[in-house]
Amino acid sequence: METLHYLLMKAHTETNRRILAEAAELGLSPGQPKILECLMQCGEINQKAIASRCEIEQATVGSILLRMERDGLICRTHRGDNRRSLFVSLTPRGRELGTRLIGIFERADREIVRNLSAPEAEQLCTLLEKVCGIAEEETKTI
Image 1 (tube, rainbow, N blue to C red):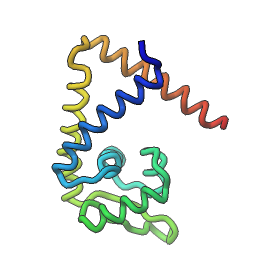
Image 2 (image 1 turned 135 degrees about the vertical axis):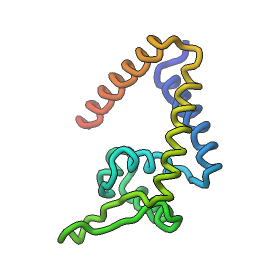
Image 3 (image 1 turned 180 degrees about the horizontal axis):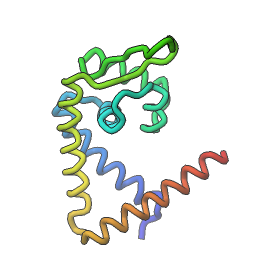
């Protein structure tokens, strides 16, 4: 049997490859699907929170957002008297692509567990959530 870290990496790579291929057909580049999903879930949110939720460096998020803004997927605005923090929200075009992207994610999820029973798929999610929680705890102590 393969090691856990290898299996986790391989599962991520295969799933990500499938998602990015379909997302590219929508004109999305790597990094954009994750941010679109975040904005679909959160609505308006600041760049720092996007970086945290998507586990992407803030500078990288900034460059991805520039492209998304240029492509008409998002808009960034200041809220109130806070001139330092920009809040990001989806444009109608961004929301439409986000909806289509959710379908891509759902298909990828179904495909990846197609040979598992419903209880096995649920158990897999539960175990992966536990693994992620432990990994996050470990990262905080480093």
